[in-house]
Amino acid sequence: MAALPDNLPRVFAELLDGELDDAARRELETLLRDNPEVRKQYLEFCAMHAMLQFEHGALGGVEKLPLNAGTKSNVKQLSASRWRRGRLLAGAAMAALVVTAAIVAGVLRPATAPVTGEESSAESISDTVVAQITGCKEARFESAGSPTRERGTFEVGTPLRQGQQIALTAGFAEITFNCGAQVVLEGPARLDVGSAWGGTLKEGVLRASVPPQAVGFRISAPTVDVIDLGTEFSIVAEPSGETEVFVLKGAVKAEQTGSAVNEKPIVLTKAQSRRFARSGSSPVTDAERKAKRWEKVVEFERHTASREYVHISFDENAGKGLRVDSVGKTSASLNVFIKTSDGSMPTHVPGRFNNALKFEGNGATKIPLAGLGDITPRTFALWLKLDPDTPLSDGNAVLGWSRRSGPPGRFQSLEIGWNANPEHGALGALRVGRGRGFIIGSTPLRDGRWHHIAVVIVPEKCSSANVDVNLYVDGRLEGITSKKSKQKRAEETAMSAESQAEALEWLWLGRGMNPKDEDRFCGELDELYIVESALTPAEIQRLMNENAPGVRSAQ
Image 1 (cartoon, rainbow, N blue to C red):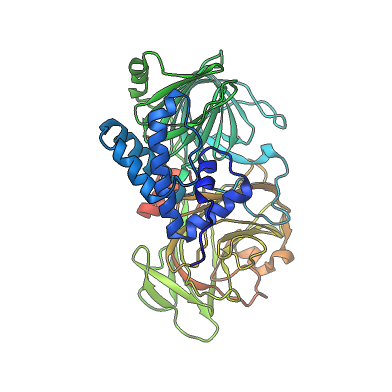
Image 2: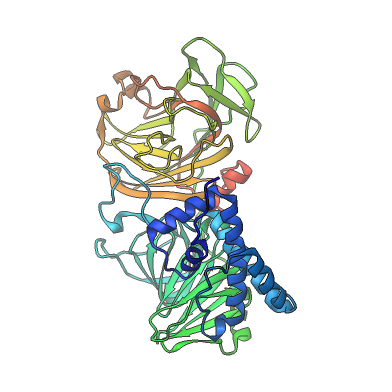
């Protein structure tokens, strides 16, 4: 194993203080992912940092830790002097655990966008859908828009774009971000939607619930930035600029902003609170009484989307046949066959749920998807397993998809596979191509383990030209892009006249769409779903955990 850098403690300190630049952040992320010793040192450093923050953070912050602070002996020595204080132990342990969990879950995500192809660059920042309104309770909105959008109304199901402004004059509104974090606004309140990973609360009351896959979610307010470390928290932003932060579960990192007082970021854990003003931070007055407001449960008005979907379970025990089930108003089943180049039988193996199908580079099939709508969202979800030694020369397109869009002879298309070109992004990571463009995730998939893949595509209402694409790996958002797609002519998508007449929508399984491409997929597939709606992050989690694309729950 290569020698470890001798400046790790300084790097850790700069990371927790928010001073680490993007290049160093990416280098540290690689070290944490690949080197157990680095992870161990980071855990020890976080434990000590959390203890110091817990004891001294309320007094104005902690000085930069010494360069040798991350050593095991120093941690033990410091812990011995603190261990007698039960209250400090509980808070420090919680903070250390959630900070470390944040790293494991991927809080060190690159600040830059996922790697994309030539057609995948955003046309405008406000074209990208990063959240949606998922619940309302007696909500009244003031019309608000982004600089490039006309003003309009908000309701359940309304997509929210990067830069969108929400002005809630009364009632409650629930907003689900594409990363999976969910916030509830209590009017009057104003929120700017910044990205799929956070926004800015200008005024009002906000409560955030952040699942593990969204650790690192951030809410900015006039005098504080709050970074989630796996938690539920609330923020009250007053018109004067003062802001109060309450932690309901887990922990947050709170960093003073807009103040002449130079205070270090502090870690707040469960049941703790802090008031941030331009003159500095202080305890919250009457915090226990104020915290009781978060005990009330809001019953939201929700909209239940239909769930039309196609499902291939791969549960057959033997043979070339596959059962394709359509569920919904067009409920039906179809039997298709895997065509192999050498006449061999497909290999059926134990899967993530029951059986799976192993593709060995010699088989593929084309499936008509009759009955699904035209200009509607789609969610593609499946389980994928790749061997660590899968050659880069083997076929890396898992499936292809195309549907008629607009005038006869024009189609939208998409291919899902893994990246075999290190110049484009992470080798072996999820790759989704649309025409000449592509978007690539960050998790290498060639590790011999099952990974859950979900790709959500959302065309604009009444127009298939503007399309948002979201990538999820193992339930976590890995990539998002918005672009205007060029509708392709039939010959560009290798769609024959016979195919055009047969169905509006087609699926190629085991290869991409181009019949001239002789590469065939090598790997294992299980539980493929094509859902006629854009599943929310919570629904993707349920599909991953329970293998059930059920309707949205009304919690």
